[in-house]
Image (cartoon, rainbow over all chains, first blue to last red; front, side, top):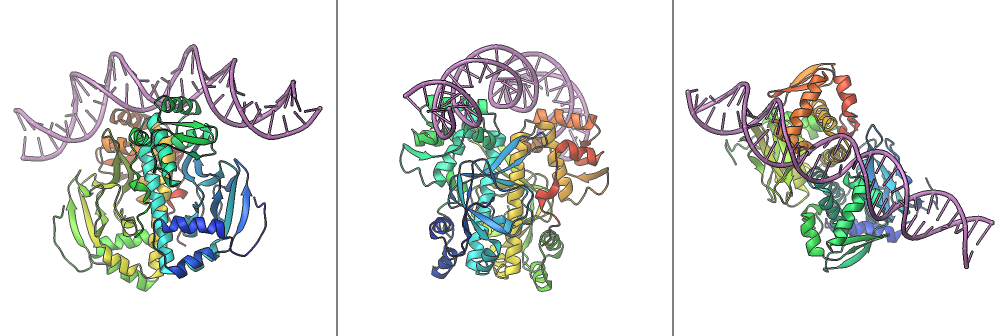
Length: 249
Length: 249
DNA sequence: CGTCAGTTTGACTGGAATCAAAACCTGTGG
DNA sequence: CCACAGGTTTTGATTCCAGTCAAACTGACG
């Protein structure tokens, strides 16, 4: 679904986000940082509910989310959807396609999304630098850790807690959580939350009302209003270590 | 929980398993293969239900499962356990600790297990070879893909299907699935299956009886008897692509 | 032969799904 | 500026899958 220019030169704002993401987990020296920022790529708009990457395809480019929210997802025989990961600006959701052949999961835009499509060839080239290869590997490992936490969330927590946990994760990944109360943009529907938490839309709606009544958090239109971060964290059984943010080794 | 010798020299049988695992997904040339086989390590026995790696600790060694079944697991506030991955002989469950600091998940022996403990330092040394580093990265990515599939399994499938899916995954990873009917060893309890599928033990028991009545598969003592592999796969909605076995790029 | 872990059964409860319809927005075009 | 259409959100009624609790059964092992 290309939609935009086909430029070759560096597109700095998007890449700066990506670099920041890598730096939150890995140390990179000056030349490595420059190599990231000099990555080529073409900006592409993807409309809401359209796929950036179709299930089962092998692509020659990686997607870097620049604006909006994207989701990795799969489905069951009877057509039920399950989101396995949310991707926010700065994430490169299919970095792992560099080393794995076919994508077994699709990547969909949950809101209008702007993507920087970076050629695999260019990524492979800079991954020849061990420091960069390691930072890619590390990001991949963090992704796996997050997926494992989702398994725990879906397997053993009940609806309210699951949803609260999801909200905590997104807040944290957006760099929130300094204050006891705050607001952030999250342009997704309750239906999407249902697909991410393995619940039905109706039940998500009711659980969100619970969270609101308990004065923990509320979802109003396209923004999340956290009213009591410490209590929300507690209610969500949320321990951010698994995100491996700021490990910076 | 050390228990055995403290040898330095290469312990070939375990490492050959590990190499085979890597080769099923990555191409490695002769010297790279030799580097793997020459890895140092000490064999350790871990008793059933004991942890190989405690939650939240940082270790200086990686575990290579040589015999038995191990599980990555976490728990919720109220003490419920959830297994996030099963690890069979040849797997190195905490390879990712090389690149991530603290383990946020524990690693437990579900059966008596023999582990080869390989120093991180030695792994880092051979990971200086790009080909090897890439194979590690690839294995890590495959792990993430498997975890994502578990999210789908727990989020959107019902008990019987979930359990069938788990059985299919293990069978496939053990290299079974050539014939329509076969048997393999799986020394774990129904309780463990419950923890892996996010169900209660009682319900696992009943669902297993279902599978048996339907002549698909049965769990007898410590072995799984698959009676009708094609039907089991269908009932499990199982598509092995996500395992990325035999991708061999 | 008693113990203990694991499996099995039964009765009951409860959380979440499903189905259906109403209310609510938000953007659109007349 | 209003009416309308579409997708969301909300509500209510009902069903069902899976959890819980408790007890009996099995089998391995000391």
